[in-house]
Every structure is written in C-alpha cells, then in structure tokens.
Image 1 (cartoon, helix red, strand yellow):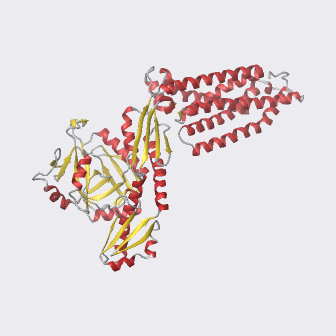
Image 2 (tube, rainbow, N blue to C red; image 1 turned 60 degrees about the horizontal axis):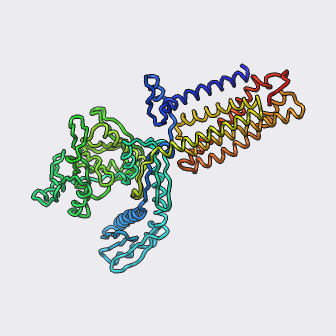
Amino acid sequence: MSANKFKWIITILAILLAVYGLIPSVLDGADGKLDRNVENYSGPTVDWFMENGKALTLGLDLQGGLLLQYGVLVEEAVQDKLERMSDDLEARLEGENSGVEVTTEHPKNTNYVDIRFKDPSNTTLITDDFMSFFPSMTQVDMGSGVVRVTMTDDYIKETKEFAVTQAVETIRERIDALGVAEPSVTRQGQNGIVVQLPGLKADDVDRAKGLIGQTAQLEFKMVDDDGTQAFFSQFQSGGLPAGFDLRRIGDGNLSVTAKDKDALIAFLETKIDRNHAIGVQYHPIYENSLEKTGVDPEASYWKSYYLFRKVDLTGEYIQDARVAVDPQFNKPYVSLTFDSRGAELFGDLSANNVGKRMAIMMGDEVQSAPVFNEAIRGGRAQITLGSMEGPMQMQRDAQDLVIVLRHGALPAPIEMQYQTVVGPTLGADSINTSLKALGVGGLLVILLMGLYYRGSGMISIGVLFLNLLFITAALAALGATLTLPGIAGVILTIGMAVDANVIIYERIREELHRGFSPYEAVRLGFDHALSAVMDGNITTAIAGLVLLQYGTGPIKGFAVTLLIGIGSTLFTAVIITRLIFDTYGAGRSRDVEKISI
C-alpha cells in the first residue's frame, strides 16, 4: 500500500468519525437549542445516538444556569482549630503525666486556650519541650494554676488562607463528581467564592446547593443507651415547648421530636452535660406510604439521639467510599473501607461496645445508628440510609454522601451571599453575534484565499471546512462546553489555519520564482514551510497549556478549543492539503506544467 493510499484511509476515517461524533449535536440542536433534549426527532436510532454519543453543551454565558456566590467564614476555621488544640493539649498532658488533673478551655471568639491544673505546681509541666508539639501556640503564664497558650498571628493568617483555598478545591471536586458540565469555581477577593453551574436542571438546583454547602465531617459517636431512657424520661411529665413531642422511635427508645431541627437541638443542648451531645435524624412521613412518595412536610419531623460527646473515629481514616446495593433488601447503602489505622480503631471500637448503638454522623445529623452485634475487624463498614426514605431518595442521598466522603469536608462553613438564575436571553444574543462574526470572518477568508491563491486557495477553503468539522466533533467527543471564549478560540483557529496555508503557499511561490518545476516547487514548499508552521503552532500550544493548567471556567474552555484547533490545523494544513496536491494537483506528477497559485 502506497503512502498516499494510507493517508487517504486515515483522512476518510477521520471524516467519518467526525460526522458520527456530531450527529448527537445535530439532533439536539435541530430545535434551535443545545439543551440535551431532542424534540424534533424520535425513534430507536435517535435514542441510540443520544445514549452512545455526546452532544455539544453550552456554558453559562450562552445557555444560562445557576450563579452562586459564597463567603467563607474563615474565623470559624480558626475557632475550630483552637477547639481541637484545646482537646489535644488536655489529652497529651493527661497521657504523659499519670495522675495529673487538668482541664482546658477555649472561650468562644478568642485566640487562646486556658489550661487549668488542680494542683498549681503542675504548671511546670508546660515546658519548652512540651510546647514544641504545638508550634502554632505561644505560652503566657497566668498564675494560680492557669497557663494560657495563644495562637500566633502568622498561624491565624495561614489558617484563614488555607480555609479559602481548600474550600475552592473541595467545592470544585464535589461539583465535578455531580456531573455538571464545565462548572466554574473561582475565588473572589479575600474570602469569596463564585460558582457558575451552566445548564443545571431545575430539579438539581437544591441538590447542588446542599452538596456545595455541606461542611460537616463524618464522625462516629457512641449512643448512650444506658442514659437515653433516663434523659428523655424527664419530659414524660411535660416541660416540652409547643410543637415538640415525646415519642418512641423505631427501636423502642424514647426520643423528643420536632419539625424544626435547629429549635430541637437548641432546646435539648440546654439539658445535657459537657460529656454528652445531641444528634438528630429526619423522619419523613409519606403521602403514599407504600411506595414512599410525596413527603408530607406537616407530618414529618426530626427525632433526637442522646450521644456521648467524644468522637471515637472520623472520616479522615476512610480510604474509599462507594454506593452498593444490599442484595437481600435491594436497598442502596454506603460501603466504607478504612485505612490500616482506621481499621484498627474501628475494630477496637466495635469490640468494646458489642450490643450498643453507634451513631454515624455528618455534623449534628445522624445518618444511621446501627448496633454492634460483634467485633468488626478487617476495616470495612457500611452506612444504611434512612429506611423511612423512598428508594430513589435513598440512592441520591447515598451518592451525595459518597461525594462528600471522597472529597473531604469543607475546612470552614460557607455562607451564601448571592444567588441568581441566569436566563438564556444573553446567550442567544451572544451566540447570534458570535456566529455572525464567525460567518463574516469565514467569508472574508474564503474571498481572500480564492482571489489571491486561485485554485490552491480553493483547496485551502475546502480543508478549512474540514478543520471546523474536526474541531466541533472533538469538542463534542470530549464533552467540552462551548462558551464565548470557546467560540473566540474557534475564530482564532480559523486565522491560524489560514496562516499555515499562507506560509506554505508563499514558499511554493518562492520555489517557482527560483525556477523549479511545479512538482518540485510543491515538494520543496511543503518541506521548507513545515518548520515555520510547526514553530508557530507549538509556541501557541504552550500558551494554551499554561491557560489550561492555571485558568478556570471560560479561560479553560478557551484553552481547550485552542489546543484542539492547533492539532486539527496541523493535520489539515500539513497532511490533508499536501495529500490533495499529491493526488490531484501539481505534486502528483513531474509532467505537470502549471499550478494555480
């Protein structure tokens, strides 16, 4: 097989693949909208193409979507660090010094922790060697058995900066896992985050907002089974606010319930001691109890659990999380795999609490509260989700929980500052303007190339259409989202493609002026122009790679379009154009006497 035949086979296959890749976009856009809904056509063939192919999608600037702006409560991140530091200080002092009685206290909205010793002489335990374990804290002696340690200003600044940076990355990973096409998550100012979700369906808006704002970390706490009955029994004779009830929940234990989650927690937290905590779980009541559809908000309520405050295990030890289905009951659950340290901790926790309930929590919400029937070794556990929920809701909740577990908790709470749904009107205007620019630019290029380079110019025009075909097909195949900057990238690519042809044709003209035959001029022109064409496109590609690596949202969309365009331009200008010359033009034979250039 000759080299030209092989090149033709590659070219024809590329054209067929491009046409195949664009069929879903053509079907989708037949009604004038690229919205992933085919309205003008139907049938098994159409369904097959839409299921097995990818249609072009439009960005927020072209089709509308959801725009959210959040503020990261960085001060909360500092306070959380100080709370953890307080617990660590107390644990290390008691662990290293048997018999020492010490308590630590971090007053709210301060940047210090007070260490109180029952025996004032034990303040000498706060040595430089001990403080080396807490390099972010500085020591201030207070006297009377109290030592105050203060967080340094540099560490406070570092904590706040990390909170915003980590929040941006965590939100981006969660949205990517949710499957939103070409989302944009960018930092704004010192503490702000702007989230753009193009083409988001109305049904997914609340889900996306809930997933973005989930700040809680997975925690395992033991339920105080021995104290539960006594704690909730105090309300049997009354004392509950209006709207609160005392019920026996599914396991037969007493529980105070209410429709307002925050009010329920606030009321019960005033009744507990410092060693206990309150957890809550939503109990939906369905209008159709058999199929579990149509939640009745008036009848549904939150139920409470009486927990030990101590956190026995956290989600930081989780190595993997995924949705699985219980074959016995055909219900989804979340399967957890711990790392080696987590497996050891979980095994000891289960062995020491056989017959007792463990609450698996996200923040103050109890996801499930299973009973340890035996010691569980091997590092595996599962979270069963809301047996009171319908199957579709259970599946969605399981998927959302897995997303949060895999990508971690937000380092600080975030507060929604602004929300708006961007309509498609701006997008329609922008598309029309951009398409006009593309059409006018393309027409001018066709006229220029046809008039100036005559027959050879017509070859470049045909190849230019193939270039656009390959670019749009590649964008669709990659699932890329077309934005205004992306359209700008297509227009720029047209200019670069023409530039490559101009370089080649001018070299051919130079060789003709030097007295070479059309056959030799074509061969030498392509060979000598190759380095210039490659240099120009490679340097542009480097810039595109930088934009792809460090850009976000529309900038990244521009970079993707640009890089695809560069690859397509090199293929069409260097290979296909040369192939046409070698097959039908002056490059096919030494006997050709003229070339239209």
